[in-house]
Structure formats: C-alpha cells, structure tokens
Image 1 (tube, helix red, strand yellow):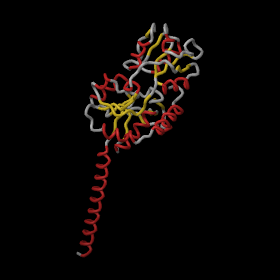
Image 2 (cartoon, rainbow, N blue to C red):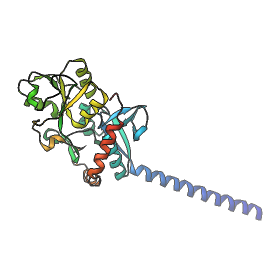
Image 3 (cartoon, rainbow, N blue to C red):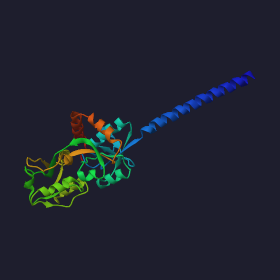
Image 4 (cartoon, helix red, strand yellow):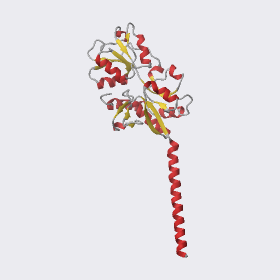
Length: 278
C-alpha cells in the first residue's frame, strides 16, 4: 500500500512537472509569436540600396520563398527597424510597380526600397521620416561624349531614360532637346541598355551611380554643377507605410536613433559589399 502510494505520488509530481514545463513552453512560444514578423517589400535589384545574392555574407537576409538573400543599405535599415520593433524581419522581393499594391493589400508591412515620399505616393500611403537623402546623377559610357558634362543641358540630343514610375523619369523633361526614351522597369535593364548603346545615359541617385561605375569599368558617373531641379520630397528616401499605420511613430523613433555618421557608414559598407553583377 505504502509503495503504491509512493508510486502514485511520484507519478503525480512527474505529471505536475510535465504540465508546468508544457505551460512554460507554451508561454514562451506565445511571447515569440506576439512579436510577430515585420514584412518588408523591396526590389532586391537596386544596389547599393538593395540587391539579391546567393548567400548570407555581409549580413544578407533570406528572401521569402526563395533560396536567395537580400543585402544592401535598405536591408540594414530594415534590420534595425525590425529589432527596434521587437519583430522578425522578413524580406519580400517585389517588383517596383508592385510595392505599393502589396502594401495597401496587406501583403507587406512596409516598403524599404529607396522610395521617395512624393506627393503622388502620399495620396495612397504614408511615409516615415527620411532615412537617406541623395543627389541625382547621370550614368554614361566612360570615354563617351557625355562623360565631361557639367550641366544637364549638355545632354541635348542624348537618348536618356530612367526607371518607370519614378521622379527620375520626370526630371528628364528639364533637359532641352533631349531624346527621352521609354522608361525601363529596373536598373539592371538600364545598365544593359547603356552597355549596348541603346541609350546614352540614365538618371539615377548618387549611390546607384557609384555602384554602377564600380560594377562596370565602362561606365562613368556625371555629377552636375548645374543639375536637376528637385524638391526635398523627391530626393529624400523614407519607409512606406499603410495610411494611418500605428508603426509610423515608433519607426520614426528608431530612425532618429541612427546617427548621420552611422548612416554614412552603412552606405559606404553597402557600396563596398555589393555584388559585382549588381
């Protein structure tokens, strides 16, 4: 009888420990899931802001649904935001034109893709405070007739393009007598067009221009003394968020904690680490 009782007590204690353990594990899982994910959309094709690579070197993050990884300035900013929010970062590779629809439909939580908070976009989505500001440049063939340009007006008669649905494409109209070419879907396509001679140059932001010239010795970047007229909203880059998002204020707090020195360091590292093919 005493032995049976001892066995029952032991079994009861074991059951209590087991249930307590299950409860602790369950609670732990709930705490993890409460943090949730921070789903960020980007092209992963606009170096040095974002690019695709085949491994996790230099802090690259897996791209959802693929065996590829995303790296770049935007990825590093996204990592810091996700950490500040206490969420797991998920990168969702999305074509440029699909980014805002993906955000408004709830497929992603934010756009961190070198996107400017233009008045047109602000009609549809909200933006955080800027996390980068850049000047516009022209990427041309090295040794060509436009490499020595100092004014945008030096591109009179040139075949110039820029990315589809960006303000880069609209500023081409400021060049008198330019031969404006159809807009292109992405920067890799523009680099191919420039290499082949289909175009004489394309409008870009300085970090991409640095990346283009680093990736291809046949390219040169033109910085202007008499450049394009732009607004702060055009040249600033910010996080795209759904209208009325409760993340906006918190993200602005996180961005405010990233000093200008650190932002410069992150960009310099992104330019140095970009894959040669980007």
